[in-house]
Length: 378
Image (cartoon, rainbow, N blue to C red; front, side, top):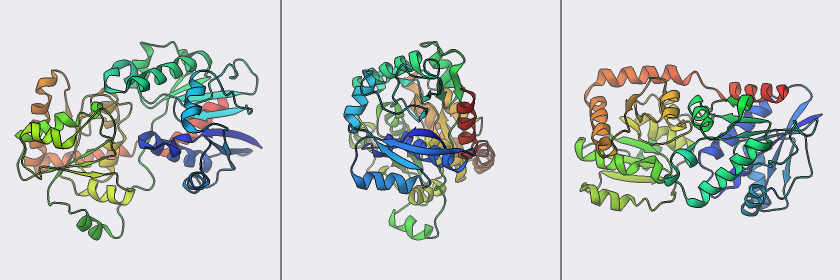
């Protein structure tokens, strides 16, 4: 029996985020679509048994879950320095840049192959929106991938183009998109969940970690030019960069209650919040995919989004696009787009229909099958 080893360590990160969701969904898809004679095993850093049990529950069907000798932080540093070479070889799939990238790929060692995923080009295009450590680590790992990886997976053609200005990956790049999570659907207790969350009749919704590139500050400033009776709800875990919602609200001169944070939500609550939003707004200035846009499409919510290249590619014309150019006027343009949807039910309905059509172009099963084809070709 042949093995495809999948690095699932993002699932034990303090904030798994979008890459954690990507890792879990892709791994489940790989298990479900494994060709005859193949099995999927997971690889995780040294972690408590409770975390390992949660991974096995999240990805049923894993043949085995291997544990490295180092914990996550130490493993990340070691691999970025070319240390802690694993004892195993063969087919390895990394859903992020956290990968054992050594001179042991298929081009150097028959029978071994490594595919590494780079989700965005933000460390090169917008480094100021990340921590200095994050920029250094991603750049170091990408350089190693350029030298040693057998294949580079990106989520969108936009990311492939952006990376081509910095690396010579050649024909090793493969575009394989993400999709909406299998657990994102309206629960039977939708009404009680909506009541518990105290959802207003009409509201705007933003989803994303609280960090600079998500442009939440620009969105909050835009509220000064949107109807007072339509508040903004924000879903997302704390990030970095000192994004202080309270300070942003005060700076924008907004009344108490115009913005409310809901923190992290499980899939059931997220589905309820998405489905009842009047407009979903995704103002991010830099992305590699923009999964929340597809999630909003799935729940039938009209979307206003930035013209970040990857987001525009994923939305495919199904959302209302807002130009990021001339940042000083970005909030005003966001407000104009939001008002147009709020004030025109026919436009909102058209966007809902287009969104439902667009989301059908993406599926985790299709993505997993593309990954299997990639490894069969290496």
